[in-house]
Image (cartoon, each protein chain N blue to C red):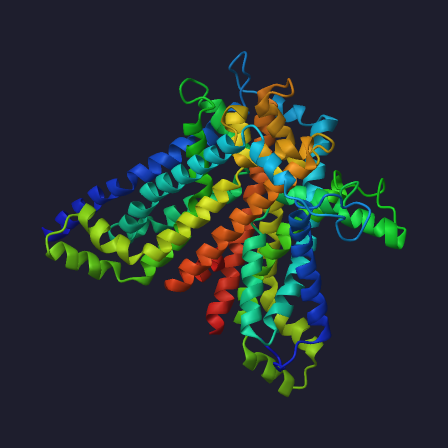
Length: 290
Length: 273
């Protein structure tokens, strides 16, 4: 009796999460499903088609994907390497106060993406930027036109700005999970510092580093505001192209925009999926070690 | 871990941290200086200082209205976020814990959907009045995007208190769910609620992509005005950027302050992100 009552109550209890689910359905899930469906349907005949995906073979779209993947991959890699090294330097810093301050700084600066950050880079590295002029005057180094903040290389610099702190935040907990005893036992067995890191430290950090790399990739791939402020239409990126289609600035079949979106969703889904798996593995390593 | 912790950092540490600080601070500090410099392209330090760009910026058309719009958007997002997330998180913890994995997935989803893709999907589906390209649609999109920032601190705060015992105690005294939330649960997770709200506020205040693509020029927010001025007038754009950075710093300081007052739920929040 009691158990049946409890079970019924449990079913009614589910109603409590309905408002939230409806919100997600209305503003996220249903629109995304319809977007996927729309990418496979011919607007005029309402029939199934893959022509929007075939249209992505045009040089403009191939280029956009190539640029986006190159930009995200490169900045993820730079952010991952520098972020891990800096995180290690923070982790080895003797004063916890300094450690805390540096982590807090990372937390603030990783959110400094978008227009203000892009403009800050124009201030220092634009044509008349502070650093551009400084290098010209004191080192006789002419950055322009070889380098430009309004180009691919400029975007790399601006993206790495928010990638490094994000990586630091992701990898610091992994460093903290490494046990002192492991280093001591390795040392007592005659391992050098390098051997310890190569054989023990790095393999243990690997899941966190891979998780960081994939999350950084997704982070850069989806970015729009920084790129829009800096390059607008001088460099084609996937997010910029989709943006142009929404704003109606280019007269294209919206189906192509949807097809681009679906391909992006697949790429993002893969990265987030690998991130989840590695993050879980990293958590497991930390947990099973304590 | 920590092979032989020394009392002094080594040279390589100074170099790495130095490079890091240089990278993080030079763009921002330069923008602050640039916004008060009369001329700064021939000398190491500016030739003179002025507050003129700020008076110009304050006089710019749309300055007040865009700030107002950004405040409206941020506060509306925080409120809607609170209303849909706090009761749901509580309910899931107390009554239907087996739905928690679903909740977790829904909170990760926004990270996997680029803002432009969500904007395209929403604009295509809601293409009828009055929703089409309206601020209401925008608020829906922004709530979805900022959800994880609200969820983490609130969820951590609820996990930190003994929510079941509190609920049972309240119920035995005859409180209904609404009274329980208002009188018992919310006062106990206030730190998490404040951290989440401030994080969401700061994120939405800087939001550009969804606003530009869903509503466009009819609802000009502060970041949109800033982007516009980066193409018109660098000095005014610098003043706007400084205002933007300052708001972000203030929000972060407040989050830290709130966090240090509570049970360090902030640390957990960044750890989880």
